[in-house]
Image (tube, rainbow, N blue to C red):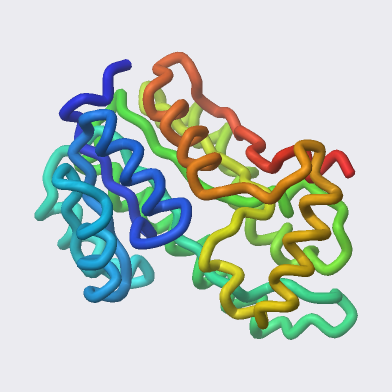
Length: 239
């Protein structure tokens, strides 16, 4: 499938995986619309993403904002959801369940809400792509909460693909990717985690946003793939 002139919305597209995907799709000739909470970050992302990328500030936790946004955009071909939050991790015995709820509120509910509200103007035989995380299918200590959030999203992929056909529904499940998601950690802790992940990974490195963007681009452009979850984790789950 040629993505040239296809209209693609990326919610969570102002940094990291979302921004890398916007750049890659724009280079393929797509007309990309990015959304993020902060207007300043939207403008900064547009400045680096290329002339085929437009965007606006939108809070995906707000249903009315989403309805207005999708109505204003009109018909489009693909929806990519890279919305996420940073809460929900930690040892289970001491895990703050309120933070886990906030983790669901920042990732699970906005992705599901955006997917549902986008259906009205999303092309019936286009595609819907969620971005989850490999924590959903790993046994690493300290990620039970994150596994619950991402596992809940991944559990919906196959039934949604069957229910919404001919719309294609897929997900990409990244491992440790060097993005601003980790910026809440002190530099020394972040680097130690990256070094450990690189050692554990089958490919000997942490991922880059472009690695995940390639997987997303494949799912948008391959019209014969639906109900699938692509593991883009460098083999981290194998360790």
